[in-house]
Each structure stands twice: as structure tokens, then as C-alpha cells.
Amino acid sequence: MRIDRALLEEIIAHAVRDAPNECCGLVIGRDGTATSARALENLAASPFRFDIDGKELIAYAFADEDDEEQLTAIYHSHTRSEPYPSQTDVNFAAGWPGVEWLIVGVPKARDAAPTVRSYLIDGGTIREIEVEVT
Image 1 (cartoon, rainbow, N blue to C red):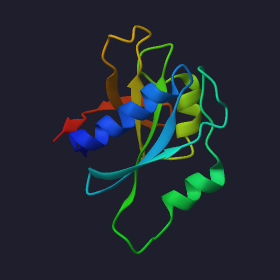
Image 2 (image 1 turned 30 degrees about the vertical axis):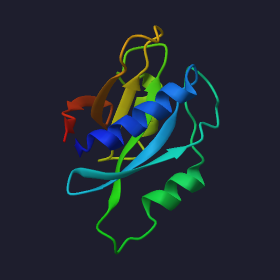
Image 3 (image 1 turned 45 degrees about the vertical axis):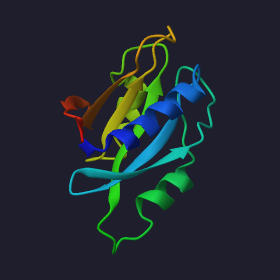
Image 4 (image 1 turned 135 degrees about the vertical axis):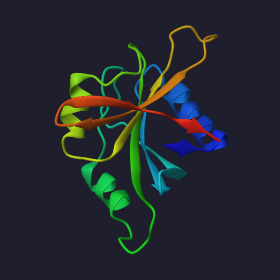
């Protein structure tokens, strides 16, 4: 995925702001390039998992089928572990094939920088995808 630095910083700021709970949101894009991000509420309000309103997710994912923009990634943060998909993430991803999982690792030490990684999760197989910051 290609993403503008300012857009990525917006996602990271959301993760830092919601810590110690996980944050969640959507990345909308076109042709492998992120064009916008939509912060969503973590209904679980938990440092261990996130929960998205399914109606809201579907509304964003299929808002305008004639538009070339589409759901490119679901993002969330990990506040207690590395930015690598958990089993919960793998289970959730089963319902969204072809959608990347952008994970922001928010370190416990506030002076340490967050890390961002992206993955495709297909049939339980996790493959890291390069995040190209422009």
C-alpha cells in the first residue's frame, strides 16, 4: 500500500490518542494508494481487542460501488503487543478477503515511536505487505 505521510500520521495519532485501548478505522484507496482514513469507535473499548459496528463497516466498504475508491485496509492498534496479527485479527480477517490489515504498534514508553506494519490475511495465512510512505 502507498500512503501519504500526513495520512499515516493521522492514523498513528488516532492510535496514540486512544491508548491504552486499541483504536480502529478504515483506509479507503484506489489502485493500491490510500486516499483517506476514517476513524471508527472501538466498541469494545479494550486494550486487548477492537470491535467495529458491522453496519458502519459495511456502509463505508460499499458506500458507492460505482466509485473507483474502495476499502483498502482495516486499521487498528496494538497497545500491549507488537504490530503483528493476533488470532482474533486472523479470525476477523476471514470475513474481509483481499483487505489489508494495517496495525499500529503503540509502545508503552511514550518517548518511543509507534511502528506500522501491514498484512494480507488469507485463509489463516499471514503475509506482510510493504507500506510505502510518500
